[in-house]
Image (cartoon, rainbow, N blue to C red):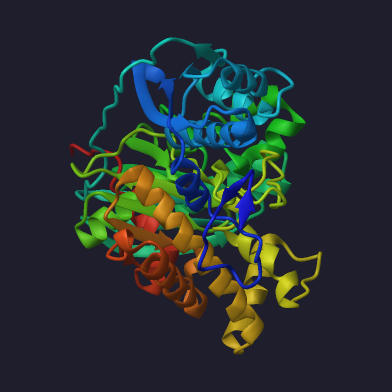
Amino acid sequence: MNLYGITIPVQNVPKLDPEFIPLLQFNRAFLKDAKQPFDVAVERSGGQIATYHTFIHGTPEMAEADRYYIHRLVKTALWMKGGFRFYISGDKAIYEDIRDAYSVGGARDFDRDFMESVFERPFEVIYCDKVPEENTRSESIGKHVNGNRIGFDVGGSDLKVSAVIDGETVFSTETIWLPKLNADPQYHYDFICDSLKKAAAHMPSVDGVGISASGVIVDNKSMVSHVYNKVKEADPELFEKTIKNIYLRTVHDCFGDVPMAVCNDGDVTALAGAMSFDRNNILGISMGTSEAVGFVDASGNITGWFNELAFMTIDANPKAMADEWSGDIGCGVKYLSQDGVLKLAPAAGIQLSDELTLAEKLVEIQKHMEAGDPAVKDIYDSIGVYLGHTLALYCDLYGCTSVLLLGRVMSGEGGEIVLDSARRVLETEYPEYAQLELLLPDEKFRRVGQSMAAASLPEVTA
C-alpha cells in the first residue's frame, strides 16, 4: 500500500474491506525517515496538559504526508485526552493549516464545536517556541459494593439495569428503546425512570445509583451524547433544560437525594474488567451501538481522559466511509461497532430491510450467524482484522496490558471469530503485542456487565 508517498506494509487485510490502511502502520512507516522535531500539546480543564513529541520530514516533496500525519496526531490527542487549547511548535505552515481546520467553518468544525460545548469556552490553537510540559492526574472511582445499589447502562439501542445487593446481582434486564429517533425529552425521561423502578422493585431500598452513559459527562451531567441528538437538533434550549441534567432529575424524582454517580460508558467498561478480572492497566472497549472506550491505569484509577475513540481515526484510507455525525472519515465508530457490521453486510451479499432499526439489523445478521451463513463469518473476520490493527494502535497510545471486550458485536459466535482474527493480526503483524491479554466475559456479562459495574460507582456511607 502507498499513501502520500509512504509505502505501508500490511500483512493482514480485511477480506470485505481490502483498501483498509491501519493508521498505526502508516504512522510507523512515516516516522522511519522523519527527522525534524515537531511538538503538540493539548490542554483540558484543571490545567491538565497532554504533550506529544514527534517528527516530520519538513521537505516540499513530503509536505502532504507531513500535514496528514500531524492532522491525525492532533485529532488522536483531542479525542483521546479532550481539550480546548492546542499548543504547536515545529513548523509554522502546518500550525496555520491546523489553526484554519479548527476555526469556524473549517474542516474540523464538529471537533471544535464539540469541545467548546463540553468545556464551555472558546477553542484555541496557539503557535509557540516550546509547548507546555505534561501535567496529568488520575482519580480513584467505583469498586464500592456495600448496600442496595442500582447500576444503569444507557445505550443507544437499549437500557440495561441491574439491582445489586452487597455486591451480588439479584436482577438484571434490558429494555429496547429508540432515543435517536425521539426529539421529545419526556420520552427519554419516562424510559429512564421506568428502568430505574424495575431494578428498585427487587430491593428493600435504594442506597445509591450508578449510571454508565455514552458521551461526555461532567458533574453527573450529560454535556454531549449521540443518544439525545434529536432533542438537541430540534430545540437546543430544551436540551439544555431537560437533557443535560436528565440523570440528576430522574434519580432524584424516583428515589430522592440518594448518592449517585454518572461516568462515561467506556470508563465503566474498563472498571468492569478491573473488578471482574482483578486487573489494572486495562483498556475497556464496548462494541455496541457505538464504540465506547475507557481506561483504568496501573494504579487502578480512572484517568479523566475523554477516551472518545469512536471519533478517532483508525483507517488512513482516503476513501474510507464518513461518520455521519462528525463528518470525518476512517473513524473507529464505523469499524468497531454495530455500524461496522452493517457497513460490511452489503459486501458480504447480505441485504437488510430499510424498515428495520439498526439494532434489529444487527439481530438479523446474528441470526444468519446462528444459521451458519459463511458470508456472515467473513463480516466478523473482517471486524476482527480491524480490531487487531486498532488494538496495536491503542497499546501504543495507552500502554495497556489487558483489554476487556464487551458489547453486542462481541456476542455469540461472531464475537469469538472477532477475537480469533484480532489475535491472529497481533501475533503475525505486531509481535511486541502478541501477549496482550484479551478478555471476553461470559455471555451475560458481555450484555449487562457495564450496568453491574456502574452500580459500584457511588460511595454509600450508610
